[in-house]
Length: 499
Length: 111
Image 1 (cartoon, each protein chain N blue to C red):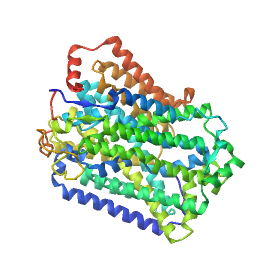
Image 2: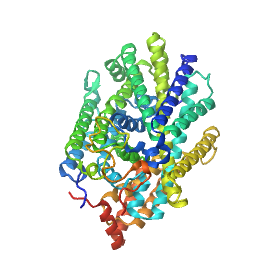
Image 3: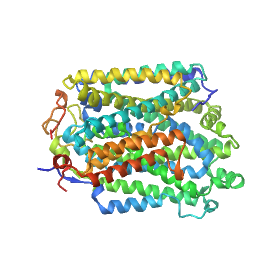
Image 4: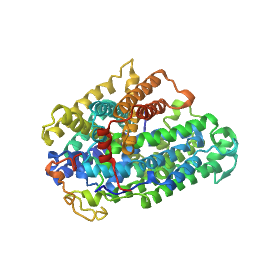
């Protein structure tokens, strides 16, 4: 995501400074409005379970769409042509997958006041080993996810300000602001800033699309160019491409829906209707975001032909530079676009950090280390451990280790291994806790080993192979070993509903 | 008394709808040179996939509106003391469900 933007120096700094001030202001506002907040886990981590449709929708939006959607997707569309159209349906798949577990998880969240995904796993299996393994996998995946966002913030800021603000200063500035408003207002701050960040991002991508259509020609001229020079970019995917398409739909659909910070948002909805309305809006957002940035990438094929793979990564920067040179409106619109991109990265990072802290507060410190701690102490423990994690991640972001770098790459592959416990546990009273533990561990190890070795049988991603093994062990293990009467009775009490 | 639950995962029509639409959003049913047929500069196969994607969004909307209904808000309360949005869809104020989030009581119900 290293985009050099010659057009933007001091104006970039101005927008970033204003943006930082606005975010801090939101934090102070959330703090003043809810002074009792720090005393309770519910208030700090779930916004008191009171998020309305608009805010809940944007906070879901911010967890699914990041700066990478704007900067990374157009270059991929540029290289793959229409075969990358899969980026639209895979975002819809996320909502479809939600429908297989969100209704029940929301109801259980209300009934048992669940706070984190691990909270649910603990309630369902009453197994220390399953809960701790799930917590570790989530913390590990979330930490790597956070690391990726930090690197992106640094590169984005240094790109937007034309190198005036060095990478390190950009990272520190935004992390300090992010931690400050998160500490001040918890989930409310995060959700309110997500809303502002989401609007900035939507404004940016639409301006980019309109500018591109107006100055660089529309889709017909792009198609004409492709017909003459690279007809394969117009064609549907071949057999290998179809496998890739299929596995992206499944992996992104399941993976993004069970991201711990995405699951936690289900618990923070004010009501069932609020949650439903947010999901309905989310079902159409892929057309307005992924669809728009995909079109920008396609227009780029004819407007800036012949870019190498490395050069094409700069596509959005190149297009923004060209648009900014047209007139003052587009100049500022492009400054805002890149401000919005950085905003989107920060908004993804703050959600991840909050969920990270909540798992520490509630599932490790509050459950095993000091169960009799007050809620205030639990929140504080989560905040402080979150801060230490952030400090360590900053060091890693600056001095990437030469070897074993791949242990910082695993995210999706590891997080997705919690899915069987999370989802099968919602429906299957016989599900055996030991089988869940072995499956989760084996799936995570397999996904990790396949990733390190660069092994991708049949072109299917390593995370999916791990998930297949994981689910198989859960199902076969349960069928072979069965479950004791007490566990089954407990499961019936927890997930028993009248249909 | 057990809480009531009407959910998409238990409805056959929802599964059928999702499976059919999932099959349609995978572009396996086009000839390999289908990219030469264009409408307004967009390959027809891509428009078809977009159309199927839109149908999926519409089907999701229908599923959420009609196939998902629980009584959890009535039984356990919804919103919070600060919740005052007109669109909360919650007929009752918090506390009705018997647990007060602000007092630090976490488990709504122990099992």
